[in-house]
Image (tube, rainbow over all chains, first blue to last red; front, side):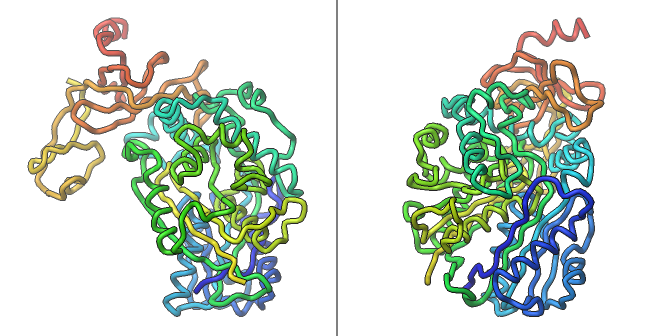
Length: 378
Length: 114
């Protein structure tokens, strides 16, 4: 059994003068305090990477900074799915009997620690070095190719996708730590500057500074026990050139495994935490998971299905698109919000009741998928 | 011909672009290098208005397409504006080694003006 016992997230936005290790330290210490654990209880550590500090051994760097000597420490690199894979890996370490408390932490000063051009260039490097990157493609361009295909296949419109950006912004307005809280409309999204057609500026998540941490333990620590009930991964390709024709395939494979290991069905879920790097990312995940008909994710959002008082509240902190995206911490912030919601600690953002939740992230260009089911058992 | 090099499996006939030691479909190590005919269909296309590097920015943007070659592989190409998903294209490698897709039937005209 593995439980999410401690969670923490910093505000996302600008943290000038603070490096990745500083930010991760803050999140890690806050997560320990949240779990009520002394730092020496951490015997496993999975750290993210930082584009602003490309170190070979960030896991050990973090162990040293926290003055702990874990039995296992390493740096995981699965792009945007790193946090999700880290949490699943923590469960495996616990199941194997290798660790009892695993700290999963990510964070960096992606916004203020480098120029925007450097950030865009680094991220473009997930493309193929011979066959894709030299064409001048960027992460938004790779996702734009998938977005154009999605619109072509489903008949959804750009305005439908825009609904998802509007929803994330509305949710972020209720969280004091969100980077972007100013309300936007579908018209604002449609009028924002084009980045790579059909994606416009407001279809894209921002670049942020920030950090988040999750502690996964062999037993529950506080009053509410949040169990990692099921997990699944799928790694279908790296480069968009070799992406499966079924745009949702990786999400379907990972989710099927997660629901099977949890002994639950997608229909049992009452809360969603889905990776939302771009509006089409979110639309494709929602539809691959069966939470909207093909091409209908935006319409479902417009109808309130994913709002706080809807049937399936989604990313109530505002997601990557509005809470912000500092790399590995981006998806960990989703997990922090899920745990707070499931514990009933989300304040004015609190949903009525959420005993079961599904979280899902991708890395690369729909390349690596990791999803898990959370279940409140006490 | 297109100048686009593919690997083609001698055992199952599957073709692919990214260099490998075995066929991704059947695992056979027996394959040959073949040149693609260049004919294909646009699987997706985008106009990039914000390049990864400022020096790559082009006023009005530049096109990138994923083209499904008639031999099977989907490859990334540069392209001019105006292509749509499903359009038939002809792909040819340019001087820098990168492929460009143009609307089928327009390649002779393009070559003449280039």
